[in-house]
Length: 202
Ligand code: ZN
Figure 1: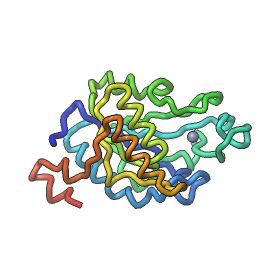
Figure 2 (figure 1 turned 60 degrees about the horizontal axis):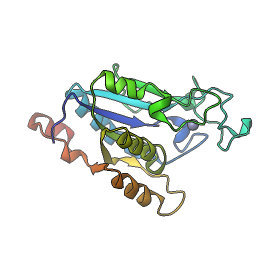
Figure 3 (figure 1 turned 180 degrees about the vertical axis):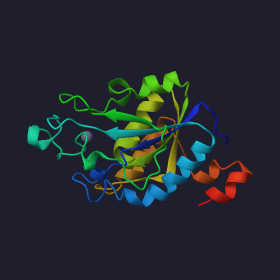
Figure 4 (figure 1 turned 90 degrees about the vertical axis):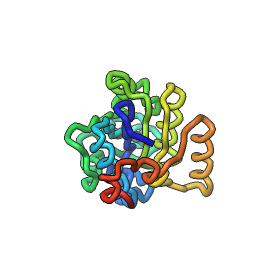
């Protein structure tokens, strides 16, 4: 499989508050950081777009328990908890997409409520390679929504991590993503340049 300009790497929710030390841990996401960095390196070498999708809430966001919502306070704009983990090699030209920025909207319509879709269209991107956390939450939502929007979606099965709060929820998420047309791949399916192979083979 060859990476082209129509492809983009999409990394979801790799923020401190969603990691084990954070206010709203989703998964032990640190363990996928080295693999995500390999994907970043691979896509950078092909000069394709790299997106980071991040939660970015105002402090009065309606999803927070402190404001009558269901969730602990997390990813408040400008805080350490909202920062992307420092071990991720975020390229200088990466495109950061902030979601959940309206205090009165309980998010989860990424394509309608952020600049993601317009950015993809402006860059003529048709295929997304999605990694990050958590498999059965925002990774799944992003993948399924992207499929419904007509994008080709590949799930980076070696660069996602499940929360597995409910046993079997991750397997179910994988099944649901497959049903809408998402294809699961690993980095070995993408390494096609022999000059990069040595560098990138896990
Ligand atoms: Zn949130």
